[in-house]
Each structure stands twice: as structure tokens, then as C-alpha cells.
Length: 76
Image (tube, rainbow, N blue to C red):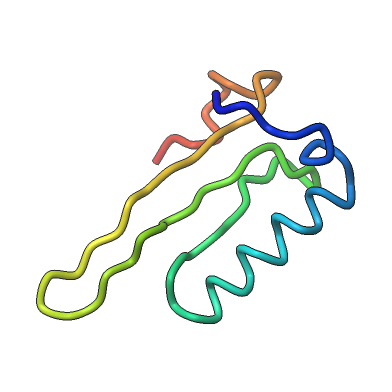
């Protein structure tokens, strides 16, 4: 896992991450989503580096909280 500054793990740091993802989504560069269990956010799924045109592509990445792994939350 890449090193993250301490503020990344704070509510303000996460608000900044979310704002950045929303801005990139507005420009068509990423599609961010969340993985939920009930009303609790337990992970994230993102399609990034979206390329439009004849060769449409994107990279899929996701994570799930270690407390919720192996429980089928990201199964088809």
C-alpha cells in the first residue's frame, strides 16, 4: 500500500479525496463508486484512466474493508 499522509485518514482528508474524485468524474476521467453493506460504506470501486474513442478503455480498481472481506460483497 502506498504511503499516505496522516491527514488522508481524517474526515477532512477523505472529503478532499471525494471532492477530487467527483471533479474527475465531472470531466469524464473516472467513475467512482462505493461498496455498501446495509447503510455502511465498506469499500470503493473505481474505473480510472478512462479513454474515449475507438479504443475505449479504463482501469478497474477496488478495495473492501478487511472486516468485510470474504463475505461475498464483491461477488457477481
